[in-house]
Image (cartoon, rainbow, N blue to C red; front, side, top):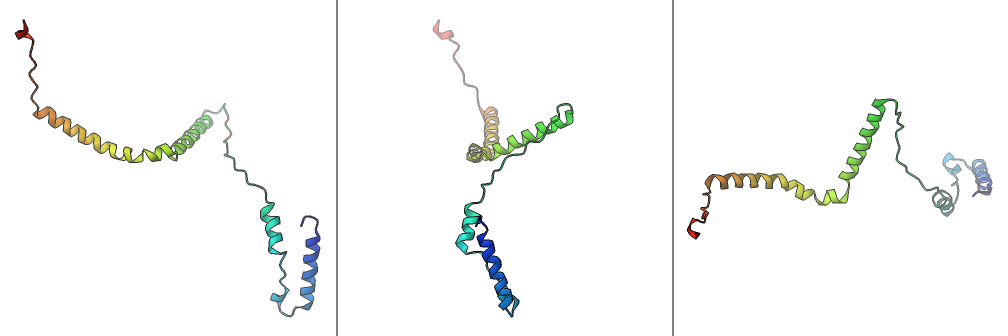
Length: 126
């Protein structure tokens, strides 16, 4: 397909179809065979390179540098939220406030109703 033979073939088929057709639908001619199209358009296609966009920063403008720092912090925050460790520890973080509240209630009740144990002073040892 790189040398133009297919284009010459295609245009010749189009002209023949246009001359002999009585219905416009009959003038349809496929560009090439399916295998040729797959090879040319999919097989030889360039690989897409995706790169993150780095915002230009003007160091003389404090507003721009602050904006760049904010964007960097947002990107870092987003990458943390998407990390595996953050997702794995999500159930623990979800129940932590409940456990803290139960522990605080328990400590409050324990301090209210508990009697401080009597500790021997050691007077009887002398």
